[in-house]
View (cartoon, rainbow, N blue to C red):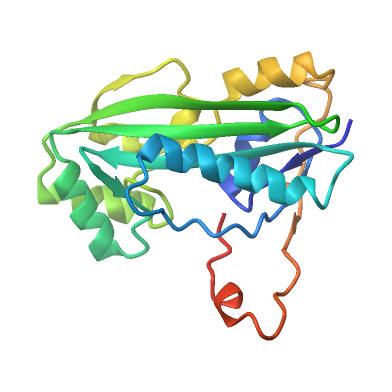
Length: 220
């Protein structure tokens, strides 16, 4: 069975490689804007399903994996910082507090069946002073990571505690849940050697009249 990851994320692709599964990666081209009043769990569930559905339409013979992650800090949702200043502000805001990472997983099977879930993982941050924040940011440069840290790298120096069933959910793809689903669908695990990450198929250009679609971010 062909397996497709509906994502351009290098982090998710690297995670999926751990399962030893051959797969393709296709950019879903989904607008990730949060709806007014949308709860964090509803947001990541909706976007995970939308990504899988968008790619399933272009690969109907494949098992398609859609995923999205939302970082909730209190009632706020924090995105990718993008810049050092924004990352520094995020870490200052998170100092001494517990951040909830909600990772949606939506698997679209060729016969139309679906698996849909949200996997939570919580991180309690240490009291972070500016010296530690600046040293960490210079070391890991986590500008493309919600929360402004890389848990799979040096980000653990910022943590006081972690709570959750699946630490890979914190990186962006809950492998423990996904491995169970893939086996249930007859996908052989640990059968493909680790190779260079698959090339991502980018979405088709929007029609010339759709300026709004052309301006959307494609980092999904």
